[in-house]
Length: 85
Image (cartoon, rainbow, N blue to C red; front, side, top):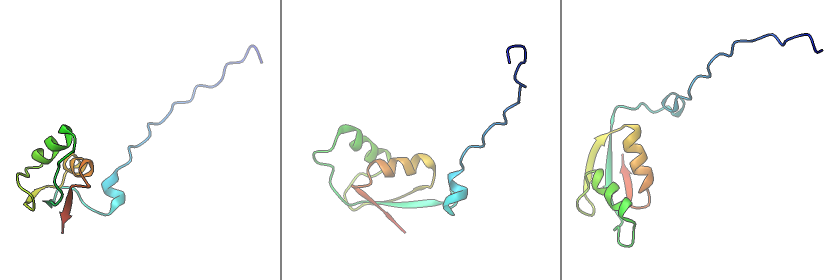
């Protein structure tokens, strides 16, 4: 109808998806990372990620805080490292 305006409804904000609540794992602990595959023929970005994780030698194991940033770095080079439980 030309004379009526639609009723304005206030939208409620959508809650962000909390990954830690749904995974069953708590963030904030530590994770052990082992470098198992050489980064020969990998991009420089992957090399910097390995170094950023604190890995200097093959088969070295380092312990890092279990944060989303570290998990993202592990995911980026997941074919080169393994998580030691």
